[in-house]
Length: 377
Image 1 (cartoon, rainbow, N blue to C red):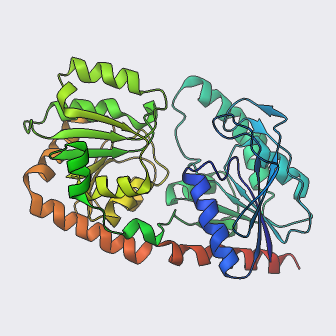
Image 2 (image 1 turned 180 degrees about the vertical axis):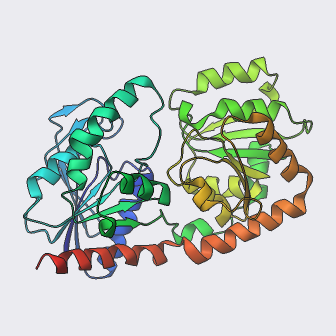
């Protein structure tokens, strides 16, 4: 089977979508399929990339953007021929919308939404855009494709309320590669970064992650030897967080690490007291799975797909978004009861191993491809 993927960005850019496309491509190659990835010739940072490239046996075709106004509003026009399946990655990305219109009727389309269509728009401008885009473009596109892949049940419910055919909607979570389960070295990262006990956040420093809530909860802890460590690229929030930390008297207990490599991330997760995820919205929360893979518990806001993932009181603790007092209480509970924290971490790891390993999840995509292709003959 010849499978053509269309993604806003791909290698050498690496993020959540890019990593999943890469892992899926590698799995398909191992099963004897041909794989082509169509993507932008401009990296996320704006650097030019070669028009044609390969990554192992993956063929990469890159296109100059017709216009480039941001991640979702970058239009490139893939030239797709001799494909058995076209797999689009990313709802509301204009290049995917263009591709869906131009290949429908010729090639079956599978559409992975990735970023959580049920996410409440964070501001008035985004709400206005979605109010127009969803009925005029998004839903019309999704009604023409043969399969829709959502990351969580909350997205399935959102699609169902809008009348999308139920038999075309598939919920497939983001999976973990085997390397994610390799034991991190807590001592190595503690020694290198001179860390004692710490609460960890992993992800972009963006306002939607509500890290100001975590800092306020951290300031309320009596455990003054416990640090708050933020590992992730700045997406516009760092300066404000630094100012807030200073006003809360947290300067000596907060660490901004920036982006870290996968090995360092495993070490950080292995050594933390818990992972904190105070986000305004998460379609799934891949860092929760990564924490579980290292046997650590999580404290997370009860938003988006998180309540479908975390079993409150078993492998993590949930709280109502914005309730920083309860967030602080949950953190205190895990800091003061290590046996409870370790038990939750073990429960999470067992579940991650049983349900979220990539080698268990990837075959579900192949099954969808086969079903869609067969239904078109």
